[in-house]
Amino acid sequence: MPVRSAWLLPGGSEPGQTREDTRLSPLGTMTPTGPLTTRPGVIPGGQPFAAAGAGAMALQVGIGRAIVQGTTAQGAYPVALDAPAVVDFVDGDALHDRVDTVVVRVLDQLFDIHGQNLARIEVVQGDPDATPAPPTLDPACTPLWDVVVPAGTSAGVGGIDWGTALLDRRRYTVAVGGIAPGVDTTSAGAYVGQYRDTAGVLERWTGSAWVPYRAPEVPVETTTSGATAASGFTLVSFNARRRSGFCSWTLEVSRTGAKINASTAGNIDDILVGTIPAGWRPAPPADVEGPACDGYGGGVARVNPSGAVTLRVWSGGGSIESPRVIRISAAYVL
Image (tube, rainbow, N blue to C red; front, top):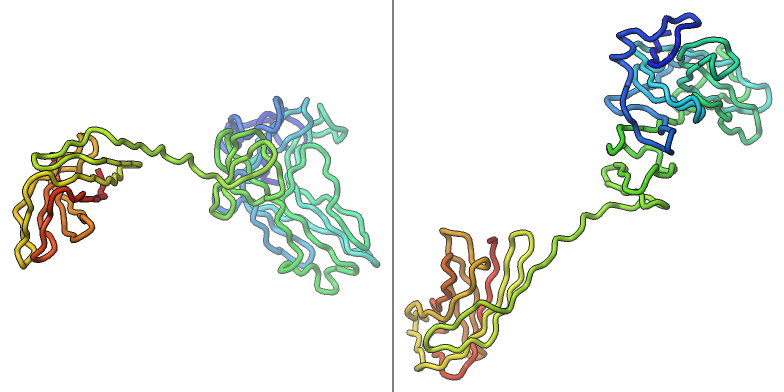
């Protein structure tokens, strides 16, 4: 069987670790589950260990790479399947259904009783039962697929219905700090701050639960100082805020000079009202316009990259008299 494993002594029907084993096997620090243990699972990329029926009672498992965790003393084995493997299932029980599990398994005679050193794809048979459950797996077994084998199933009666019998047990694992696809939505995280991608939603492990990740909000900066009023006006207030390069502000000034009259068309000369501080001005070269109002009439003001705020138009035939307060607002990208 074309299953390669690194860090395994020679033995059984396979040679020891070859150069090809080393190149194909996923080496490096993977996601931890404890100080000396690694999260077992499939390495994402394409459709690793994809399953398809290969006969009435046979399943073909496609190529892929995985991490197989043994006991804490054993450590984790990197494994690669470089050609599809076919596994067979025994006939169904006469009375009850059962659930078998297809696994990547590592045999290591230093730690088990099988007397071989090799990795393979195999079927772990479950117990027939009225409510069958997947079998309990030994260490150094990473589950790939559960297969429901109905009572009485055999090649002679049509075999396993591969369209309904398969349950995906592949759990993904990645290098430490990496973001794994969250197919196994029931498993706990390994460490606080771990991330996973569940159906396009980024989730973070808090230590007790997976929660959707929301980036910290960018702080909002505000100011009420730095603005000045032009001749003929008195500064009443200036309130500005900016976040992520977007700025908005409100400037209030009272008219202290002579009455300003607008033509019937609403035209007035560009009258300088005040200046807003540096850091809160629109990016050159564009000017920005905003609404202006004094409670009796309204118009449009302009703010340019130098910070100058000018009144451009006003209510047709209207006027701005002392001591009316003019309120001007603007919003733009800095």
